[in-house]
Each structure stands twice: as structure tokens, then as C-alpha cells.
Length: 411
Image (cartoon, rainbow, N blue to C red; front, side, top):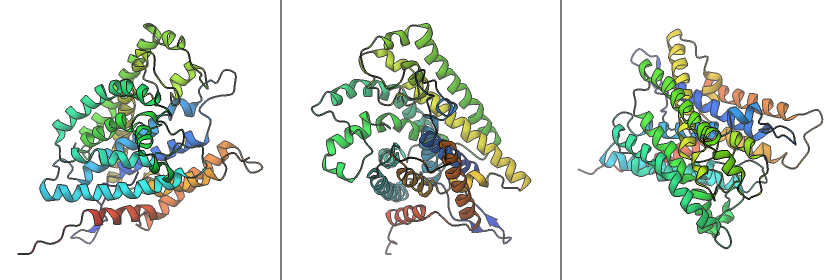
């Protein structure tokens, strides 16, 4: 959730500023932050008894978190060589920096996990994802594409086979809460939850990082690639949703899933549109045919990766326009997008203060969301204008520099 692909601006020969930052990437990250905040604060289901999906549930559930993960892969690619990945000692140094950054994110995530908050905190999973993709950082585009395709196709199937074994254990290897420091005392349960049985199953989510790494190896500053990401992302996302619709509606998948025993918090039809988290997804192979948010299936991974690519392409195109007209209108999103670790952590901490508590008099969920969203934008813009990293971004950056430090060779 940190902005990894950037370097501090350097002076050009004519005295102006040259920035290595792809503003569109930060803007996409800012949009992902606001989208995730909306799913935390606004209803994703309507009132009972129908529990109809809301606009927030239909648009942002599953997609915002996936966008964060894909952007993490893009950031790793940009920080480790862009089109030409680093090799040898440079690659080892880069991996050390990523590992140290992941450690900082994990510590922040475990700390937030100790709060009483009804938000599924992603940071520990995010940190583990960084560590899992370390072996892939030196791969070129073609190899990354093969690995990403294989992971998208096979990881959901393997997870479907492994997950019941973990849930049938006594006690089940599932946390049922955000990972926190106390869970380090039960490593088997923690790892099973992080990789297979929890809210953000790392085993399948590695797909997002691999896809992001592949996208980051492209020439992202060219209009051709930006249009390709936008149009191709939309096409992949639409095709995946169509496949899921045909499987469930036309070929009888939903009827088969409805017939399964089990307790559900919401009607299955609504959950298939908004969020499958909490369902064990066992007992029928039809679970693998859904494109539902947080299903972790091949179609879900393809759909959310497609939407992520489209969003990235869209904001990169806007960044190109902003550069040409010399008006940085994306700063309202790129500002907070450059310090999402700090803003996300602050958001979770604020939400924890209202968990299981009534909102202040006169406040609604919508007011709470827009207050936090506007504060995030204002803070992000201010830090961007003064050219400073967020506080947690500074810590992560410092840790990364320490991890990537190489002593000078002695001649």
C-alpha cells in the first residue's frame, strides 16, 4: 500500500523539476483507497428482508482491494527495473529493500489488527504478498505472463481442494478476526488463514501481484499501452462476468449452490453479486464457476484484474493529458494515493473508535464517509504540495533503503 515506484524529484539541467512518478499510478491508488473506504463505511447490502445490493456493493466490493494488489505489483516492477528487471547484486539489493518494506507493513497491520474494528485489514496479507513475489522480481515480461496465467488458472483449484482440509481441522485453521500480534503464537492457524481461509487469501492473490509485475514491465508512458490497458481490461472484465453469468444462470450453477446446506448471512443471490466472504465455498465444484467479488476463483481474478488494468489505463491517460496541458488536476487523487499506508491506517484507527458505538448526533454513514474521504484528499494534497512522504511511507522508505544497502566494494 506504499508508493514504491517513485523516487524523489531531481533537478533537471535547466533548473526545473523532473519527476520519476507516474501520476496516473498514484491517482489509481488514491481511487482504490477511497473505494475501499466506501465499502468499510457505507452499506453494501440494502435493508432486510430483500438485502438488495447497493451501488457501493455492486461497484466497489472486491474491485478496490484487487486494484490495490495489482498496483502493488506495478509498483514493484517500476522499482526493480521497469522493462528491464535488475539482475545479480542489484536484484538481491532490491529484494532486500522490498522485504524490509514488507516488514514495516506487517508490523503496522498486526498493530491495527489488535483494534476492535469491523474492517477486514489487508496490511498483513499485503506484506506477505510482497514476500511471496520476491522470487519473481527478476523475471522478464514473457515469463511473468506465463506465471500469472498459470497462477490465475490453477491457484483457485488448489485452494478449493486444500481449504476443506484446513476447515475440518480441530479447531478449524481460521482466525475469524484480523491478524494481530497474539496470532504469532499460533503460526499454523495464522498461515492457514492468511493463505487460504481468511478474507484475502494470499495463495490466490499472488495472481494480482504477478499481473501487476507484468503490467509494470510495459511502456506505461506510451498512449498505445495506456489505451490497451483500458480497452483490454474492460474486455477481460466483461468476458469474465459473462462467463460467470452463463455458468450460474444459464447452466444451472446458482440452483445447485442454492441447494447446498449451510447458513448464510444474506440471500445467496445478493452475496454472489457483492461478496462471498464468510461462505466456505465447499461441497460443489460450481463455486469455481462464479465471478463473484472475493470468490477467489479464476473468473473473479480475471474480472477484478481486468477492472484494475482498465482503471490504471484510464488514469494513465488522464495523467498524459495533465502533463500536456501542464495542469496537475489529478493531484486530488494522486496526493492521497502517494501516502495510502498512512491514510489507510488512520482510517482504520478512526473507524475503530465508532465500532459498536452510535454515530455522533446528526451524523449518518454517508456523512462519516465523505468527511473521512475529504480529509484524506486534503491531507494527501497538502503533502504532495510540500513534496513530503507520509509518516508511515517515510518509515517504509527508510527501512527499504536499509534493506537494499550494499557496502562499497574494497579495491
